[in-house]
Image (tube, rainbow over all chains, first blue to last red; front, side, top):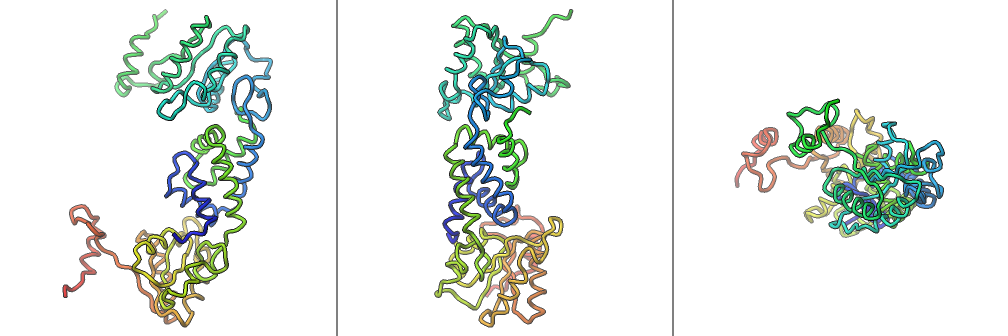
Length: 199
Length: 199
């Protein structure tokens, strides 16, 4: 290897990014140093700033610069429903629908024994405390319909129901514009099973 | 959007990485802040260090912490041949073959009018000066056999030949273990055209 040590350090540091292996970290380092030093400077600074300033909201566990995030401080929102999502992106997708006005809890992950992520890592103790707030009347579990998301939903459902808390799960079925010809059989059989009476 | 401003800044800063769009920069930011703060800290520090310390070797134009890199300072190497490559990775691949003992010149790119990269951006003026060193007897152009690499090779070839400098290009042909059945027709026709007499 003929790379200077500082360059090798940068290349290896870039591998902490998800989905970045030795080839792309090398390509990224060259690109930053050769074609976008300004961008690299900004990246170094904003990484440091995020590490220094960002913490988690005490209520919803989402990233926040303050102990309570703006959404949890919003007095206009319904305090009686709590929606549990895996990641902040999911929260934003739900917000974009403008059809939910309640509270959130962001797990920041999902149960994944293969990656060593257990109940503690997704803050289920904090969720339990939050869900036991007498103001909360219902918890909606909106984790993904992947195997890990389903396992997480099942675990949360059992945990909350055993404490007498009302829990629901978002619905499964054909997506908007979905065609039966192209939908997978799992979705189709669920859509049949969970059919709704026409009124 | 409900993301805190520092988080949004980090997400947008990550987009300076090649091949990283809005979705993956968001995923990267969450991953760093949630699962790998130590890696993020290391990345911020090594980016800053690389920006502060790395410059280019005066002779080969490769990244170096000093004005002459270790390879160019090596008195054991042949001073009469100069091999021109696109990127430091190419230099390393050639070094790994252990079949080249001469000097290098790293363009840090290739001619690419579409991306606004012209002769100045790949340091052809520096290359010309280096190639005119009386110690250099031959310049081997080892840019890639892509259309941009070929155009770069052609440009360099013309530039150096017009100054009376001997220039060669690395050979094209079937790769080791290559099977005629699976090789593309361009490679095959070149392999036919550039056939070598059996001795």
